[in-house]
Image (cartoon, rainbow, N blue to C red; front, side, top):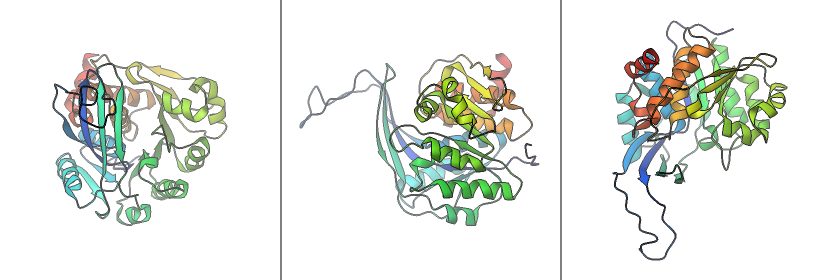
Length: 317
């Protein structure tokens, strides 16, 4: 049964990074030893330094829709860390834990055809026990933990879920990020023993299951009996409420895609703002879809999601 808090306080735990965003590239550079027409690519849009990371993006959107959010991730006492603290605090996101180590950075270039190149510096691993020592009891959302936890990470993730349950709150796991170092099926389902809901994109679930979600659903449902939310990008989301229940497709909202980075995190912030409050799974997905559509339609991504904008999208559509 869903926990009920007078104010749906949330701790978003995971990747916190400073994003260097380059958008609208007509082509990507090719390696060379000197600057050349091959390696030196001009772009006509300015590079932007954005607040980023899966946990930060979700926390910003959740705070925009509910008033506040806690954030658990490494934010060092360096230039990038100061940038993150200033921007996140202004958005009513409270960073939990001591500052230290090195702040993660992510330089990402987006092509006009949807291709992307990225350069990732992971920063210092997150110390979960230090985080829990300063945590104000709340619901807990884990996202992109493979990007910030040192392996083995299962016990650290489970400790967060158990801490939430000990105070009558909920724990949610986003199974991403995909790619090198991604969570595998055994890690996900072991962590899920202390989770109330799983979220992931169709690409992430396909990578974990070795096939698309519908084909591999039985494998996952043998191991996890709670609700699953499958993100479909512009097509919306699918709700899988229980192992033997019917799946429900929740269509997305029309938008002109500008910056896809962080749209899935924005969905999570919108979804959680509903599900941890008074909305059911379907209604929460619609709120998540609205937040995701606003994020993908802005060069600033999740930073531009507001409650007014989300409410307007849902009213109009």
